[in-house]
Image (cartoon, rainbow, N blue to C red; front, side, top):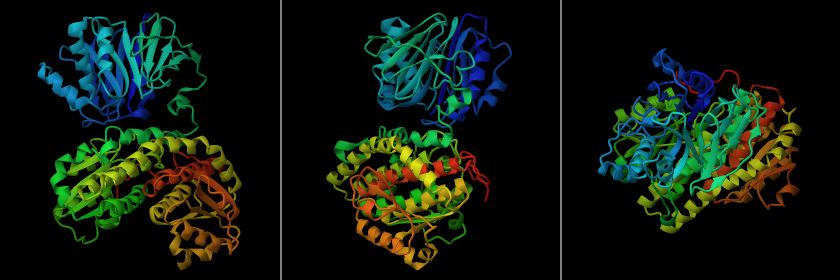
Length: 608
Protein backbone atom coordinates (compact mmCIF):
# COMPACT_ATOMS: atom_id res chain seq x y z
CA UNK A 1 0.00 0.00 0.00
CA UNK A 2 1.53 3.28 -1.16
CA UNK A 3 0.04 6.76 -1.39
CA UNK A 4 -0.13 8.77 -4.62
CA UNK A 5 -1.27 12.36 -5.12
CA UNK A 6 -1.34 14.53 -8.23
CA UNK A 7 -2.49 18.07 -8.94
CA UNK A 8 -3.03 20.31 -11.95
CA UNK A 9 -4.53 23.79 -11.67
CA UNK A 10 -4.75 27.28 -13.08
CA UNK A 11 -5.68 29.19 -9.90
CA UNK A 12 -2.17 30.39 -9.10
CA UNK A 13 -1.57 27.83 -6.35
CA UNK A 14 1.93 26.38 -5.96
CA UNK A 15 1.60 22.68 -6.77
CA UNK A 16 4.51 21.89 -4.44
CA UNK A 17 2.59 23.22 -1.43
CA UNK A 18 -0.60 21.41 -2.42
CA UNK A 19 1.21 18.12 -2.95
CA UNK A 20 3.36 18.27 0.19
CA UNK A 21 0.35 19.05 2.38
CA UNK A 22 -1.56 16.21 0.72
CA UNK A 23 1.23 13.73 1.34
CA UNK A 24 0.95 14.36 5.08
CA UNK A 25 -2.64 13.15 5.07
CA UNK A 26 -1.59 10.03 3.12
CA UNK A 27 1.30 9.14 5.41
CA UNK A 28 -0.65 6.32 7.04
CA UNK A 29 -0.32 4.49 3.68
CA UNK A 30 3.48 4.39 3.68
CA UNK A 31 6.52 6.01 5.19
CA UNK A 32 9.53 4.22 3.69
CA UNK A 33 10.29 6.97 1.18
CA UNK A 34 8.71 10.03 -0.42
CA UNK A 35 9.07 12.00 -3.63
CA UNK A 36 7.64 14.85 -5.70
CA UNK A 37 7.90 15.93 -9.35
CA UNK A 38 6.94 19.28 -10.85
CA UNK A 39 7.56 19.70 -14.60
CA UNK A 40 8.71 23.28 -13.98
CA UNK A 41 11.11 22.43 -11.12
CA UNK A 42 12.23 18.80 -11.36
CA UNK A 43 12.20 15.63 -9.28
CA UNK A 44 13.09 15.32 -5.57
CA UNK A 45 12.87 12.09 -3.57
CA UNK A 46 14.34 10.61 -0.43
CA UNK A 47 14.16 7.66 1.98
CA UNK A 48 11.96 8.38 4.96
CA UNK A 49 8.69 10.19 5.45
CA UNK A 50 7.32 13.57 4.37
CA UNK A 51 9.41 15.43 6.95
CA UNK A 52 12.57 14.16 5.24
CA UNK A 53 11.25 15.21 1.83
CA UNK A 54 10.47 18.72 3.10
CA UNK A 55 14.11 19.12 4.13
CA UNK A 56 15.28 18.34 0.60
CA UNK A 57 12.79 20.42 -1.40
CA UNK A 58 14.29 23.89 -2.13
CA UNK A 59 12.28 27.06 -1.48
CA UNK A 60 12.23 27.91 -5.19
CA UNK A 61 10.53 24.57 -5.99
CA UNK A 62 7.33 25.79 -7.70
CA UNK A 63 4.90 24.91 -10.46
CA UNK A 64 1.28 24.65 -11.54
CA UNK A 65 1.11 20.84 -11.59
CA UNK A 66 2.88 17.75 -10.37
CA UNK A 67 2.77 14.24 -8.93
CA UNK A 68 3.89 12.96 -5.53
CA UNK A 69 4.27 9.64 -3.72
CA UNK A 70 4.69 7.96 -0.36
CA UNK A 71 6.15 4.46 -0.56
CA UNK A 72 5.42 1.30 1.33
CA UNK A 73 8.24 -0.81 -0.09
CA UNK A 74 7.41 -4.02 -1.98
CA UNK A 75 10.16 -4.46 -4.59
CA UNK A 76 13.51 -3.12 -3.45
CA UNK A 77 14.66 -1.57 -0.21
CA UNK A 78 13.63 1.95 0.91
CA UNK A 79 16.39 3.88 -0.89
CA UNK A 80 16.44 7.08 -2.91
CA UNK A 81 16.85 5.10 -6.12
CA UNK A 82 13.78 3.00 -5.37
CA UNK A 83 11.66 5.96 -4.28
CA UNK A 84 9.01 7.37 -6.61
CA UNK A 85 8.47 9.24 -8.91
CA UNK A 86 10.32 7.05 -11.41
CA UNK A 87 11.66 8.39 -14.68
CA UNK A 88 12.24 7.02 -18.16
CA UNK A 89 15.68 7.22 -19.80
CA UNK A 90 15.01 10.73 -21.12
CA UNK A 91 13.76 12.22 -17.87
CA UNK A 92 10.66 13.45 -19.69
CA UNK A 93 8.11 10.93 -18.39
CA UNK A 94 7.49 10.54 -14.65
CA UNK A 95 5.30 8.02 -12.86
CA UNK A 96 4.08 7.14 -9.36
CA UNK A 97 2.54 3.76 -8.59
CA UNK A 98 0.75 1.84 -5.86
CA UNK A 99 0.70 -1.90 -6.52
CA UNK A 100 2.78 -4.75 -7.92
CA UNK A 101 3.69 -5.40 -11.58
CA UNK A 102 3.74 -9.19 -11.80
CA UNK A 103 5.40 -9.54 -15.21
CA UNK A 104 8.10 -6.93 -14.55
CA UNK A 105 10.97 -9.41 -15.04
CA UNK A 106 10.03 -10.36 -18.58
CA UNK A 107 9.25 -6.75 -19.50
CA UNK A 108 12.55 -5.58 -18.05
CA UNK A 109 14.50 -8.18 -20.01
CA UNK A 110 12.80 -7.07 -23.23
CA UNK A 111 13.37 -3.37 -22.58
CA UNK A 112 17.02 -3.88 -21.69
CA UNK A 113 17.55 -5.51 -25.08
CA UNK A 114 16.31 -2.33 -26.74
CA UNK A 115 18.73 -0.18 -24.77
CA UNK A 116 16.78 0.94 -21.71
CA UNK A 117 18.88 1.51 -18.59
CA UNK A 118 17.33 0.88 -15.18
CA UNK A 119 18.56 2.59 -12.03
CA UNK A 120 16.37 0.99 -9.35
CA UNK A 121 15.21 -2.39 -8.06
CA UNK A 122 11.57 -1.32 -8.27
CA UNK A 123 9.03 -3.04 -10.49
CA UNK A 124 7.46 0.40 -11.07
CA UNK A 125 10.40 1.64 -13.14
CA UNK A 126 9.61 -0.96 -15.79
CA UNK A 127 6.26 0.69 -16.49
CA UNK A 128 7.62 4.19 -17.11
CA UNK A 129 10.24 2.78 -19.52
CA UNK A 130 7.48 0.85 -21.25
CA UNK A 131 5.59 4.12 -21.84
CA UNK A 132 8.81 5.61 -23.22
CA UNK A 133 9.21 2.66 -25.60
CA UNK A 134 5.68 3.08 -26.94
CA UNK A 135 6.25 6.83 -27.39
CA UNK A 136 8.73 5.93 -30.13
CA UNK A 137 5.97 4.50 -32.30
CA UNK A 138 2.88 6.34 -31.04
CA UNK A 139 4.45 9.80 -30.67
CA UNK A 140 1.52 10.58 -28.36
CA UNK A 141 1.70 10.46 -24.56
CA UNK A 142 -1.86 9.27 -24.00
CA UNK A 143 -1.69 6.53 -26.65
CA UNK A 144 1.71 5.37 -25.37
CA UNK A 145 0.42 5.20 -21.78
CA UNK A 146 -2.59 3.15 -22.87
CA UNK A 147 -0.43 0.75 -24.90
CA UNK A 148 1.90 0.23 -21.93
CA UNK A 149 -0.96 -0.42 -19.51
CA UNK A 150 -2.34 -3.08 -21.82
CA UNK A 151 0.94 -4.97 -21.55
CA UNK A 152 1.32 -5.13 -17.76
CA UNK A 153 -0.13 -7.73 -15.39
CA UNK A 154 -0.69 -7.11 -11.73
CA UNK A 155 -2.18 -4.36 -9.63
CA UNK A 156 -1.77 -0.65 -9.99
CA UNK A 157 -3.02 2.75 -9.04
CA UNK A 158 -0.99 5.13 -11.22
CA UNK A 159 -0.45 8.80 -11.96
CA UNK A 160 1.95 9.78 -14.75
CA UNK A 161 3.05 13.05 -16.31
CA UNK A 162 4.93 14.14 -19.46
CA UNK A 163 7.25 17.12 -19.00
CA UNK A 164 6.24 18.72 -22.30
CA UNK A 165 2.51 18.57 -21.50
CA UNK A 166 2.58 19.77 -17.86
CA UNK A 167 -1.13 20.49 -17.51
CA UNK A 168 -2.16 16.92 -18.35
CA UNK A 169 -1.87 14.01 -15.91
CA UNK A 170 -2.93 10.43 -16.64
CA UNK A 171 -4.28 8.07 -13.96
CA UNK A 172 -5.18 4.38 -14.13
CA UNK A 173 -6.57 1.76 -11.79
CA UNK A 174 -6.33 -2.03 -11.61
CA UNK A 175 -6.86 -3.41 -8.13
CA UNK A 176 -5.44 -0.35 -6.30
CA UNK A 177 -7.75 2.57 -5.48
CA UNK A 178 -7.79 5.82 -7.44
CA UNK A 179 -10.09 8.79 -6.85
CA UNK A 180 -10.36 11.98 -8.91
CA UNK A 181 -11.05 15.30 -7.21
CA UNK A 182 -12.97 17.81 -9.31
CA UNK A 183 -12.45 21.44 -8.35
CA UNK A 184 -12.85 24.91 -9.83
CA UNK A 185 -10.04 25.23 -12.40
CA UNK A 186 -8.11 22.49 -10.61
CA UNK A 187 -8.21 18.69 -10.57
CA UNK A 188 -6.66 16.03 -8.36
CA UNK A 189 -5.71 12.34 -8.41
CA UNK A 190 -5.17 10.40 -5.18
CA UNK A 191 -5.15 6.96 -3.56
CA UNK A 192 -8.01 8.04 -1.32
CA UNK A 193 -9.99 11.26 -0.73
CA UNK A 194 -8.01 12.49 2.31
CA UNK A 195 -5.60 14.87 0.46
CA UNK A 196 -8.41 16.08 -1.83
CA UNK A 197 -10.96 17.06 0.82
CA UNK A 198 -9.30 20.37 1.85
CA UNK A 199 -9.82 21.53 -1.77
CA UNK A 200 -13.05 19.92 -2.98
CA UNK A 201 -15.60 17.33 -1.86
CA UNK A 202 -16.66 16.47 -5.42
CA UNK A 203 -15.03 13.21 -6.48
CA UNK A 204 -15.20 10.36 -8.97
CA UNK A 205 -13.91 6.90 -8.05
CA UNK A 206 -12.25 4.94 -10.84
CA UNK A 207 -13.07 1.27 -11.28
CA UNK A 208 -10.68 -1.51 -12.29
CA UNK A 209 -9.53 -1.31 -15.90
CA UNK A 210 -10.22 2.42 -16.19
CA UNK A 211 -7.94 5.29 -17.22
CA UNK A 212 -8.50 8.99 -16.54
CA UNK A 213 -6.94 12.13 -17.98
CA UNK A 214 -7.15 15.39 -16.04
CA UNK A 215 -6.32 18.99 -16.92
CA UNK A 216 -7.18 22.08 -14.85
CA UNK A 217 -10.55 22.46 -16.60
CA UNK A 218 -11.80 18.95 -17.33
CA UNK A 219 -11.47 15.20 -16.88
CA UNK A 220 -12.10 12.19 -19.11
CA UNK A 221 -12.49 8.52 -18.19
CA UNK A 222 -12.18 5.58 -20.55
CA UNK A 223 -11.41 1.86 -20.44
CA UNK A 224 -8.21 0.10 -21.46
CA UNK A 225 -9.81 -0.60 -24.86
CA UNK A 226 -10.44 3.18 -25.26
CA UNK A 227 -14.20 2.87 -24.72
CA UNK A 228 -15.50 6.04 -23.09
CA UNK A 229 -16.95 5.95 -19.55
CA UNK A 230 -19.45 8.40 -18.09
CA UNK A 231 -19.76 8.43 -14.31
CA UNK A 232 -21.51 11.13 -12.34
CA UNK A 233 -19.46 12.77 -9.57
CA UNK A 234 -20.42 12.28 -5.94
CA UNK A 235 -19.99 14.45 -2.86
CA UNK A 236 -18.06 13.17 0.14
CA UNK A 237 -19.16 14.17 3.62
CA UNK A 238 -16.18 12.56 5.42
CA UNK A 239 -13.47 14.63 7.03
CA UNK A 240 -9.79 14.00 6.24
CA UNK A 241 -9.23 11.58 9.13
CA UNK A 242 -12.31 9.57 8.21
CA UNK A 243 -11.04 9.43 4.62
CA UNK A 244 -7.75 7.90 5.80
CA UNK A 245 -9.79 5.23 7.49
CA UNK A 246 -11.87 4.67 4.38
CA UNK A 247 -14.98 5.80 6.21
CA UNK A 248 -14.48 3.25 9.01
CA UNK A 249 -14.51 4.38 12.60
CA UNK A 250 -11.13 2.84 13.44
CA UNK A 251 -8.04 1.70 11.59
CA UNK A 252 -8.44 -1.75 13.15
CA UNK A 253 -11.83 -2.28 11.52
CA UNK A 254 -10.50 -0.96 8.22
CA UNK A 255 -7.58 -3.38 8.41
CA UNK A 256 -9.84 -6.33 9.25
CA UNK A 257 -12.02 -5.37 6.29
CA UNK A 258 -8.93 -5.39 4.05
CA UNK A 259 -8.48 -9.12 4.75
CA UNK A 260 -9.65 -10.39 1.34
CA UNK A 261 -7.40 -7.91 -0.49
CA UNK A 262 -4.46 -8.79 1.75
CA UNK A 263 -4.79 -12.51 1.00
CA UNK A 264 -5.03 -11.75 -2.73
CA UNK A 265 -1.90 -9.58 -2.55
CA UNK A 266 -0.03 -12.25 -0.61
CA UNK A 267 -0.92 -14.89 -3.21
CA UNK A 268 -0.48 -12.69 -6.28
CA UNK A 269 2.18 -14.01 -8.63
CA UNK A 270 3.06 -16.83 -6.23
CA UNK A 271 0.30 -19.42 -6.62
CA UNK A 272 0.73 -21.90 -9.48
CA UNK A 273 -2.59 -23.73 -9.31
CA UNK A 274 -2.18 -26.06 -12.30
CA UNK A 275 1.15 -27.37 -10.97
CA UNK A 276 0.02 -27.44 -7.36
CA UNK A 277 3.01 -25.37 -6.34
CA UNK A 278 4.11 -21.97 -5.09
CA UNK A 279 6.67 -19.67 -6.67
CA UNK A 280 8.56 -17.85 -3.93
CA UNK A 281 11.24 -15.76 -5.62
CA UNK A 282 12.69 -14.64 -2.30
CA UNK A 283 13.68 -18.23 -1.51
CA UNK A 284 15.26 -19.08 -4.86
CA UNK A 285 18.74 -18.07 -3.69
CA UNK A 286 18.48 -20.60 -0.85
CA UNK A 287 16.94 -23.42 -2.92
CA UNK A 288 19.82 -25.87 -2.59
CA UNK A 289 20.13 -25.32 1.16
CA UNK A 290 16.39 -25.71 1.68
CA UNK A 291 16.46 -29.13 0.05
CA UNK A 292 19.00 -30.26 2.65
CA UNK A 293 17.28 -28.75 5.69
CA UNK A 294 16.04 -31.43 8.09
CA UNK A 295 14.42 -29.15 10.68
CA UNK A 296 12.85 -25.69 10.96
CA UNK A 297 12.86 -23.57 14.09
CA UNK A 298 10.31 -20.75 13.92
CA UNK A 299 11.10 -17.71 16.07
CA UNK A 300 8.49 -15.02 16.67
CA UNK A 301 6.73 -13.00 19.37
CA UNK A 302 3.08 -12.42 20.23
CA UNK A 303 0.59 -12.83 17.39
CA UNK A 304 3.38 -13.77 14.96
CA UNK A 305 4.25 -16.73 17.17
CA UNK A 306 0.67 -18.01 16.87
CA UNK A 307 0.99 -17.79 13.09
CA UNK A 308 4.15 -19.85 13.52
CA UNK A 309 2.24 -22.50 15.48
CA UNK A 310 -0.29 -22.76 12.64
CA UNK A 311 2.67 -23.09 10.26
CA UNK A 312 4.10 -25.88 12.40
CA UNK A 313 1.00 -28.00 11.77
CA UNK A 314 1.00 -27.12 8.07
CA UNK A 315 4.66 -27.91 7.47
CA UNK A 316 4.82 -31.10 9.51
CA UNK A 317 1.63 -32.60 8.08
CA UNK A 318 2.06 -31.63 4.43
CA UNK A 319 5.78 -30.94 3.89
CA UNK A 320 6.94 -33.73 6.24
CA UNK A 321 9.55 -31.61 7.97
CA UNK A 322 9.99 -31.30 11.76
CA UNK A 323 9.17 -27.82 13.08
CA UNK A 324 9.59 -26.19 16.47
CA UNK A 325 8.14 -22.80 17.42
CA UNK A 326 10.15 -20.73 19.87
CA UNK A 327 9.26 -17.41 21.47
CA UNK A 328 12.00 -15.01 20.43
CA UNK A 329 12.56 -13.69 23.94
CA UNK A 330 13.26 -17.21 25.23
CA UNK A 331 15.19 -18.56 22.27
CA UNK A 332 17.98 -16.03 22.66
CA UNK A 333 18.75 -17.29 26.17
CA UNK A 334 18.68 -21.00 25.36
CA UNK A 335 21.50 -23.16 24.13
CA UNK A 336 19.68 -24.16 20.94
CA UNK A 337 20.76 -27.38 19.23
CA UNK A 338 20.97 -26.14 15.66
CA UNK A 339 23.46 -26.56 12.83
CA UNK A 340 23.85 -26.08 9.08
CA UNK A 341 20.89 -28.42 8.43
CA UNK A 342 18.57 -26.26 10.52
CA UNK A 343 16.56 -23.36 9.14
CA UNK A 344 15.68 -20.57 11.57
CA UNK A 345 12.50 -18.91 10.29
CA UNK A 346 11.74 -15.48 11.77
CA UNK A 347 8.20 -14.07 11.53
CA UNK A 348 7.75 -10.35 12.21
CA UNK A 349 5.33 -7.75 10.86
CA UNK A 350 7.72 -4.86 11.40
CA UNK A 351 10.95 -6.74 10.78
CA UNK A 352 12.40 -4.87 13.76
CA UNK A 353 11.25 -6.97 16.75
CA UNK A 354 14.40 -7.07 18.87
CA UNK A 355 13.94 -10.51 20.44
CA UNK A 356 13.20 -12.09 17.06
CA UNK A 357 16.15 -10.29 15.47
CA UNK A 358 18.51 -11.55 18.17
CA UNK A 359 17.21 -15.09 17.60
CA UNK A 360 18.11 -14.72 13.90
CA UNK A 361 21.60 -13.57 14.85
CA UNK A 362 22.00 -16.50 17.22
CA UNK A 363 20.96 -18.85 14.43
CA UNK A 364 23.57 -17.31 12.13
CA UNK A 365 26.28 -17.72 14.74
CA UNK A 366 25.47 -21.42 14.93
CA UNK A 367 25.55 -21.95 11.17
CA UNK A 368 21.81 -22.21 10.48
CA UNK A 369 20.09 -21.04 7.32
CA UNK A 370 18.09 -17.96 8.33
CA UNK A 371 14.77 -17.11 6.68
CA UNK A 372 12.23 -14.34 7.22
CA UNK A 373 8.52 -13.73 6.77
CA UNK A 374 8.40 -9.95 7.07
CA UNK A 375 5.97 -7.22 6.05
CA UNK A 376 8.38 -4.28 5.97
CA UNK A 377 10.78 -4.29 3.02
CA UNK A 378 14.29 -3.20 3.96
CA UNK A 379 13.72 -3.82 7.68
CA UNK A 380 16.57 -5.21 9.77
CA UNK A 381 15.28 -8.80 9.81
CA UNK A 382 14.69 -8.66 6.05
CA UNK A 383 18.28 -7.50 5.54
CA UNK A 384 19.97 -9.88 7.94
CA UNK A 385 18.25 -13.14 6.96
CA UNK A 386 19.67 -15.24 4.13
CA UNK A 387 16.37 -15.38 2.24
CA UNK A 388 12.68 -14.82 2.83
CA UNK A 389 9.20 -13.88 1.74
CA UNK A 390 7.52 -10.50 2.01
CA UNK A 391 3.89 -10.35 3.13
CA UNK A 392 2.71 -7.48 0.89
CA UNK A 393 0.04 -6.75 3.50
CA UNK A 394 0.63 -3.00 3.46
CA UNK A 395 1.16 -0.85 6.55
CA UNK A 396 -0.78 -1.80 9.65
CA UNK A 397 -1.63 1.28 11.71
CA UNK A 398 -3.64 -0.24 14.54
CA UNK A 399 -1.46 -1.71 17.30
CA UNK A 400 -3.44 -4.96 17.33
CA UNK A 401 -2.25 -7.04 14.37
CA UNK A 402 -5.04 -8.40 12.18
CA UNK A 403 -4.36 -8.35 8.44
CA UNK A 404 -0.66 -9.10 8.95
CA UNK A 405 -1.65 -12.27 10.84
CA UNK A 406 -3.80 -13.40 7.89
CA UNK A 407 -0.93 -12.71 5.52
CA UNK A 408 1.59 -14.57 7.70
CA UNK A 409 -0.56 -17.70 7.73
CA UNK A 410 -1.09 -17.40 3.97
CA UNK A 411 2.67 -17.18 3.38
CA UNK A 412 3.17 -20.24 5.60
CA UNK A 413 0.65 -22.14 3.46
CA UNK A 414 2.62 -21.13 0.35
CA UNK A 415 5.85 -22.18 2.05
CA UNK A 416 4.25 -25.52 2.88
CA UNK A 417 3.44 -26.08 -0.79
CA UNK A 418 6.90 -24.91 -1.85
CA UNK A 419 8.76 -27.21 0.55
CA UNK A 420 6.20 -30.00 0.24
CA UNK A 421 6.71 -30.30 -3.51
CA UNK A 422 10.46 -30.52 -2.89
CA UNK A 423 9.83 -33.33 -0.41
CA UNK A 424 7.34 -35.63 -2.06
CA UNK A 425 4.00 -33.82 -1.91
CA UNK A 426 1.96 -35.00 -4.88
CA UNK A 427 0.79 -32.58 -7.52
CA UNK A 428 -2.81 -33.49 -6.67
CA UNK A 429 -2.33 -32.56 -3.00
CA UNK A 430 -0.67 -29.32 -4.03
CA UNK A 431 -3.52 -28.51 -6.40
CA UNK A 432 -6.08 -29.07 -3.64
CA UNK A 433 -4.26 -26.60 -1.37
CA UNK A 434 -3.82 -24.10 -4.21
CA UNK A 435 -7.49 -24.20 -5.17
CA UNK A 436 -8.52 -23.74 -1.55
CA UNK A 437 -6.14 -20.80 -1.16
CA UNK A 438 -7.61 -19.14 -4.21
CA UNK A 439 -11.10 -19.38 -2.68
CA UNK A 440 -10.12 -17.77 0.63
CA UNK A 441 -10.64 -14.06 -0.22
CA UNK A 442 -14.27 -14.59 -1.18
CA UNK A 443 -14.88 -16.68 1.93
CA UNK A 444 -13.34 -14.08 4.21
CA UNK A 445 -15.58 -11.51 2.55
CA UNK A 446 -18.65 -13.60 3.42
CA UNK A 447 -17.63 -13.49 7.09
CA UNK A 448 -17.12 -9.73 6.93
CA UNK A 449 -20.50 -9.23 5.28
CA UNK A 450 -22.14 -10.82 8.36
CA UNK A 451 -20.20 -8.82 10.95
CA UNK A 452 -23.39 -7.32 12.42
CA UNK A 453 -24.10 -10.69 14.08
CA UNK A 454 -20.66 -10.61 15.68
CA UNK A 455 -21.25 -7.07 16.91
CA UNK A 456 -24.57 -8.14 18.46
CA UNK A 457 -22.84 -11.02 20.22
CA UNK A 458 -20.16 -8.73 21.65
CA UNK A 459 -22.90 -6.50 23.08
CA UNK A 460 -24.67 -9.51 24.61
CA UNK A 461 -21.56 -10.59 26.53
CA UNK A 462 -20.18 -7.11 27.30
CA UNK A 463 -20.59 -7.45 31.08
CA UNK A 464 -18.50 -10.61 31.30
CA UNK A 465 -15.00 -10.17 32.71
CA UNK A 466 -13.61 -13.63 31.86
CA UNK A 467 -13.45 -15.67 28.66
CA UNK A 468 -11.95 -19.01 27.72
CA UNK A 469 -11.02 -19.74 24.08
CA UNK A 470 -10.52 -23.38 23.09
CA UNK A 471 -9.46 -25.16 19.91
CA UNK A 472 -7.56 -28.22 18.75
CA UNK A 473 -4.86 -29.00 16.22
CA UNK A 474 -4.74 -26.22 13.59
CA UNK A 475 -7.13 -24.12 15.65
CA UNK A 476 -5.39 -24.44 18.98
CA UNK A 477 -3.16 -21.44 18.06
CA UNK A 478 -6.27 -19.57 16.89
CA UNK A 479 -7.73 -19.95 20.39
CA UNK A 480 -4.64 -18.24 21.79
CA UNK A 481 -4.89 -15.49 19.17
CA UNK A 482 -8.57 -14.90 19.95
CA UNK A 483 -7.73 -14.56 23.63
CA UNK A 484 -4.82 -12.18 23.16
CA UNK A 485 -6.89 -9.92 20.93
CA UNK A 486 -9.66 -9.65 23.51
CA UNK A 487 -7.34 -9.04 26.46
CA UNK A 488 -5.10 -6.48 24.73
CA UNK A 489 -8.05 -4.42 23.49
CA UNK A 490 -10.49 -4.71 26.40
CA UNK A 491 -8.21 -5.25 29.42
CA UNK A 492 -10.22 -8.22 30.68
CA UNK A 493 -9.15 -11.76 31.50
CA UNK A 494 -9.15 -13.92 28.37
CA UNK A 495 -7.35 -17.23 28.24
CA UNK A 496 -6.46 -19.47 25.31
CA UNK A 497 -6.28 -23.20 25.78
CA UNK A 498 -5.77 -26.35 23.77
CA UNK A 499 -9.13 -28.03 24.34
CA UNK A 500 -7.48 -31.29 25.32
CA UNK A 501 -5.71 -29.50 28.17
CA UNK A 502 -8.90 -28.06 29.59
CA UNK A 503 -9.32 -30.90 32.10
CA UNK A 504 -5.77 -30.24 33.37
CA UNK A 505 -6.67 -26.95 35.00
CA UNK A 506 -8.71 -24.38 33.05
CA UNK A 507 -12.04 -26.16 33.53
CA UNK A 508 -11.84 -25.25 37.23
CA UNK A 509 -12.69 -21.67 36.25
CA UNK A 510 -15.91 -22.53 34.47
CA UNK A 511 -19.26 -21.42 35.88
CA UNK A 512 -22.36 -19.65 34.60
CA UNK A 513 -20.48 -16.33 34.43
CA UNK A 514 -17.42 -17.63 32.52
CA UNK A 515 -18.21 -18.02 28.79
CA UNK A 516 -16.16 -20.17 26.44
CA UNK A 517 -15.61 -19.47 22.74
CA UNK A 518 -15.10 -22.90 21.14
CA UNK A 519 -13.67 -23.30 17.63
CA UNK A 520 -15.64 -26.31 16.47
CA UNK A 521 -15.57 -26.21 12.67
CA UNK A 522 -15.96 -29.44 10.69
CA UNK A 523 -12.49 -31.00 10.64
CA UNK A 524 -10.63 -34.01 12.04
CA UNK A 525 -11.08 -32.68 15.60
CA UNK A 526 -14.83 -32.07 15.41
CA UNK A 527 -15.97 -34.97 17.61
CA UNK A 528 -13.29 -34.24 20.20
CA UNK A 529 -14.41 -30.61 20.37
CA UNK A 530 -18.04 -31.68 20.84
CA UNK A 531 -16.95 -33.72 23.86
CA UNK A 532 -15.16 -30.70 25.32
CA UNK A 533 -18.26 -28.55 24.87
CA UNK A 534 -20.35 -31.15 26.73
CA UNK A 535 -17.88 -30.94 29.62
CA UNK A 536 -18.33 -27.17 29.81
CA UNK A 537 -22.12 -27.32 29.54
CA UNK A 538 -22.20 -29.89 32.38
CA UNK A 539 -20.70 -27.16 34.56
CA UNK A 540 -23.24 -24.56 33.44
CA UNK A 541 -20.69 -22.63 31.36
CA UNK A 542 -22.07 -20.52 28.47
CA UNK A 543 -20.59 -21.56 25.11
CA UNK A 544 -20.24 -19.55 21.91
CA UNK A 545 -19.48 -21.91 19.03
CA UNK A 546 -17.49 -20.91 15.96
CA UNK A 547 -18.90 -23.48 13.57
CA UNK A 548 -19.01 -24.43 9.91
CA UNK A 549 -21.86 -23.19 7.75
CA UNK A 550 -24.64 -25.76 7.57
CA UNK A 551 -23.92 -27.31 10.99
CA UNK A 552 -27.39 -27.06 12.50
CA UNK A 553 -26.72 -29.68 15.19
CA UNK A 554 -24.20 -27.54 17.07
CA UNK A 555 -26.81 -24.85 17.71
CA UNK A 556 -28.78 -27.32 19.87
CA UNK A 557 -25.80 -27.78 22.19
CA UNK A 558 -24.44 -24.25 22.67
CA UNK A 559 -25.79 -20.85 23.68
CA UNK A 560 -24.74 -18.91 20.58
CA UNK A 561 -23.27 -19.69 17.16
CA UNK A 562 -21.10 -17.87 14.67
CA UNK A 563 -20.75 -19.55 11.30
CA UNK A 564 -17.83 -19.53 8.83
CA UNK A 565 -17.48 -21.07 5.35
CA UNK A 566 -15.80 -24.45 5.08
CA UNK A 567 -12.30 -24.92 3.69
CA UNK A 568 -9.60 -27.57 3.94
CA UNK A 569 -8.40 -28.14 7.49
CA UNK A 570 -4.94 -26.59 7.12
CA UNK A 571 -6.43 -23.29 5.95
CA UNK A 572 -9.27 -23.15 8.49
CA UNK A 573 -7.32 -20.84 10.89
CA UNK A 574 -7.24 -18.12 8.22
CA UNK A 575 -11.05 -18.04 8.18
CA UNK A 576 -11.67 -18.83 11.84
CA UNK A 577 -9.59 -15.98 13.23
CA UNK A 578 -11.61 -13.29 11.43
CA UNK A 579 -14.75 -13.55 13.62
CA UNK A 580 -12.51 -13.53 16.71
CA UNK A 581 -10.79 -10.34 15.53
CA UNK A 582 -14.18 -8.73 14.96
CA UNK A 583 -15.48 -9.91 18.33
CA UNK A 584 -12.50 -8.34 20.11
CA UNK A 585 -12.93 -5.14 18.11
CA UNK A 586 -16.65 -4.74 18.84
CA UNK A 587 -16.20 -5.72 22.49
CA UNK A 588 -13.59 -2.98 23.03
CA UNK A 589 -15.60 -0.46 21.04
CA UNK A 590 -18.69 -1.17 23.17
CA UNK A 591 -16.59 -0.51 26.27
CA UNK A 592 -15.59 2.87 24.84
CA UNK A 593 -11.87 2.08 24.70
CA UNK A 594 -9.21 3.31 22.27
CA UNK A 595 -9.30 0.37 19.86
CA UNK A 596 -6.34 1.48 17.72
CA UNK A 597 -4.07 2.38 20.64
CA UNK A 598 -4.55 0.00 23.59
CA UNK A 599 -2.79 1.07 26.75
CA UNK A 600 0.78 0.02 27.51
CA UNK A 601 1.35 -1.47 24.04
CA UNK A 602 3.43 -0.43 21.03
CA UNK A 603 3.21 -1.49 17.39
CA UNK A 604 6.84 -2.55 17.11
CA UNK A 605 8.78 -3.83 20.13
CA UNK A 606 12.37 -2.80 19.50
CA UNK A 607 13.62 -3.11 23.07
CA UNK A 608 14.06 -6.12 25.31
